[in-house]
Each structure stands twice: as structure tokens, then as C-alpha cells.
Image (cartoon, rainbow, N blue to C red; front, side, top):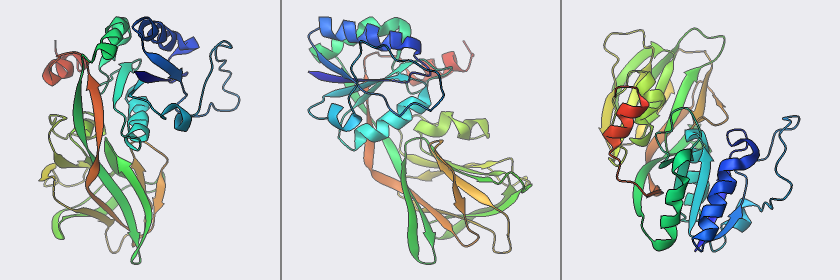
Length: 288
């Protein structure tokens, strides 16, 4: 069994967690290789252990059975989309502050030995195809596991947005923006904006206004088959930006339409524990 280890060096200082996991897996008979999820920023001052060998993700994924990543939800989001392209499941080890998507905490690394015995299950998560249409052309495409967020620019006070489902207007409001989330992303920005918590294995599209200036503007939970379209109001001359899964923001023009629909691709997460989603929510949100 070949397992790729992908540590976030900004979270895993000295890659201590990744090295501990490597020892556990090798003792259990697994072949391992290590690959960074992104290039280090120049001037970051981070030094990687000299004795470790790193390969590119493309090389690491060849013949791999599983990807184990170390970091917060952002690291896992990034890794899950890379792994999806190669049909490789992902297991997350939480080194962040919340970590809803992580299967293990760093204190549970010993559980990784069960992977080589096949003692794990796979859980599929819905994803969204995100695109921008401009004058009849598609100028942007991305894949969202958590959410796509349309927000106002730094100068604009608010933006006017029209949200449609299968061509029918479902909400028109002014505010700071809107979050279109998957069930996995319902516990992220959408929840902070007042959206509902949805079981991550469900298949729905959640539309949540951000600080709307209207009492009628509320979250909608839509059927998975809907095509959601968002554009700025016809008279709006303000600037808005689209960010997918917290990635680099794309500037929207006044006539642009952001379209979102359920993707054929699905993220696959490896499960080693039997922890209930509701137990995790209560623990992470400090209810218990």
C-alpha cells in the first residue's frame, strides 16, 4: 500500500507530525512518500528537515492508494481537490483551530496503522462546479468542496445581488455578498453568516446572504439538481469578487454571471473512527 504524506509546514512545524505518521505507517508495512501541497513563500524563513526527501504531487500520486494531509481545513480542501483528479481518497490530520473535515487529531496518529489492514471506510462528499459567464463565454472554471463566495470590494459599502435557481429569481438583496456552499461547507463561512448546519454527506446547495440589508433575505437550502446563478443588480457599478474554497479572488464585471451546479466529481474522505458528525460539531463549537 502506497500512502502519500502531505504536510503544511506552516502548521506542522518541523514536520514533526508528518514524520511521526511516516514512522507509524512504515512500521505497519506501508510504502510512503512525502510531498508539499504548495511551494513555500519566499522569505518565509521556514526550513524543512534536511534528511527528508520530497517529490512533486504529480509524481507522488503515481500508484498511490491514499493521501494523508496535515493541517487545517484549508489544507485538506486544497489536498482533496488535487487528489480527486487522480481518484485518490484523502485522510486529514487536524493541526488547525477547528478542523471539521479532519478525521484524526495529532494525538491519534497511531490509528494510521489500521490503514494497511483495510480498516477504514470511504465517505463521498458533494462538490460544486463553479463558472463565470461573460458575454456568452465561460471565462472562469473551478471546483468547490466547501463554498464559492461573492463579496464586495474594499471600497464598496454594499453590493446588489440577484440569485436565481433554474432561472427563477429566489432572492434579491443588498449586502456584503453571498455564500453558496455544499453541505461540507455549511459549517464554514456559511454558518458564520447565519446559514444552517447540514450533514456533510447530504447533497444540497446552500445559499446564504452575507450581512443583507433586508429582513426578507434568508438562507435557502436547494435541491442538488438546481443551477444557481448570481449576478450584480443591473444598475450596479460596484466591484465584486469571487473566491472558491478561500482561493485567490477573481474580479467580477458588472455583466458577469456566476453559475454553480452539482459536480460529477466527488471528494472521497477516508474514515477511521466512528465519531458522529453531531459529536464533532458539539466538540468543535464548544457546546459540550
